[in-house]
Length: 581
Image (cartoon, rainbow, N blue to C red; front, side, top):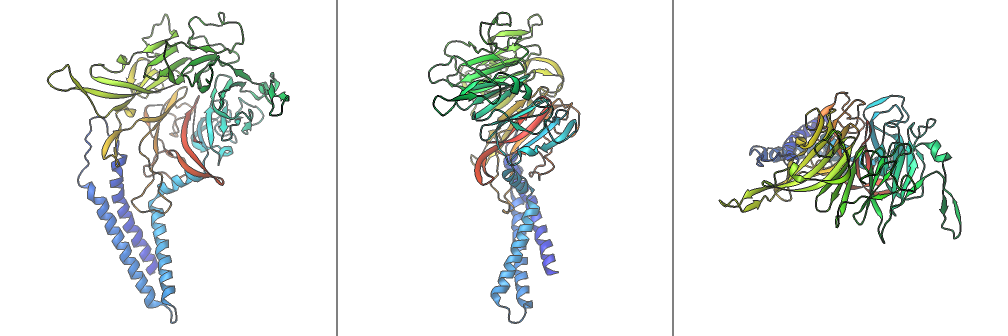
C-alpha cells in the first residue's frame, strides 16, 4: 500500500513539474511574426523551475521515507545492503514510470529512430498508397509494409504508380500503372547506383551517382517487351543484354562535367550539370512538349532536329550564367542562378511563371527573367531568392529580405536590417487552395505572399536572440502542396530522461486540394492555408499534437548505424513521408 501511495504521489508531483516545464519549453518553440515582441511574460520564467524543484523535493522526501520504512519492517536477519538495494530498485521503477508518463515525445522519436519506413495517404485506386488494400482512398497516414525498416534515396508517387530508390541504389516500382497483376513493390532497374528519379506521364527518369540519366517506361510490360541494350561487363570483352528496356539521355557535356540534378513535368525533364548548365529533353512516350517548357525558342514536334525524340537541348540563359537549382511543374520550368536571379519558361495559363498573362500567347518558350521588383519595392527591401519549387500549375519562391532604413535625416543613406525576413511567395492556379494564401484564385500571375510561411521567427537559446525560420523543403503535387519548416529541433532525449528534456522535430504543413484525402486530415474539404495534421495512429505524438518530421540524425537500421532524415513527397493526389538516407 505504501508503494502504491508513493507511486501516485511521485507521478502527481512530476506531472506538476512537467506542466511548468512545458511553459518554459514553449519559449524556443515559439514562432514570432514580423515585428512581434520577443519578451515573454515574466510570470512564466519562474513557474517551471519552481514546480520542478517542488516535484523533485517531494519525490526525494517520499523516497527517503520509503527507504526508512523498508528498514523498519525488514525481516529479522535481513542485511541492510539488501534493504537498500530493494529501495533503490523500487525508486528506479517509479522514476521510469513517471518519465514514461511524462514523455510521449520520447516514444515518438524512439519509434522514428528504430523503425524507418514510408507513410502514405491519398488516392489508392491503383494500390499505390497501400498495395495490400482494396480501399480506393486512404484518409490518414499509413505505413507501406514493404518499406518497413528501409531507408530510401528517393521516392516519387503518382495516382497510378509509385517508384523508389533503395539505399543500395536499386529502383523499385509498384501500383497498377506498373503491373495489373502484381501489387507488391518489385525491383526493376538494378545495379546502376541510382540517386534520384522523376515520374513523367508514362516514363521514369532516373539519375545515377556517376551522372548517367536513364529513361525507362513505367509499365512492366513495356520494360520487358521493348528494346534491350548491350551492357558492358566488368569482364573484358564481355557484354550482355540489359534486364529491362531503357534509354540513356546524353547531353553534350564538357570535360569533367556531369549531370547532378533532375526535375521535370508530365512531358519534359530538366538536367542540371555541375558546371551550372541546364539541358531539357522530352520525357514521355506518346506526347511531345508543346508549351515551351523545354526552353528552346521555336522547338516543336515538327521543327525538332534529326535524331532521337528525347535528344537533349541546352537551355540558354545568357553568358556567364551558372544555374544552381531547377524546378518544374506539369508544363512549366524554373531555373535559379547563383546570383539569385530566376528564369521561367513554359505554360503561363494560370500565371505560374509570374509573368503577366497574355491570353493570346499563354506559353513562353524563351527563358525570361522574373524581376524581383514584382515581389518587393527595391527602395525599401534588399531581397535575395533562396529557393524555388514547382508542381502541377503552381510555383513557389522563397526569399530572404532585409529592410532598408534611413541611416539619418539624409534619406540618400540607408542602413540594412541585421536580421532577414524569410518569406514564401506563390504563383499559379489557386482554385483548390494550392497557393496557400487563404484565397480561392483561378489565376495568380502576380507573386502573392504565403503569410502562414512568411515572417516566422523563433528564439535561439544558443544565440540568445530571435532568428528567422526558413523552409527546409517544399513539395508540390498536382493540386496540393506541403512544406517542412527549418525550425530548431531536439531529438537527443533518451527514453528515460529528466522532466525538463523533451523531443521535438520539424513542423510540417499541408494545404490545397483534398479530393482524394491527400492532405491527411481525414476529411475531404480543401484547405487554402498551410495546416498541421495529426501524427500517424501507430506512433505517439510529440509534445505538440501534430505531425512533425525527424531532422537528420544517426539511427539503427538493422545492425547498422545510418544517418537519415524524414522527407515529404506530394504527388498526383497522394502524399508520403519517408526515411531518406
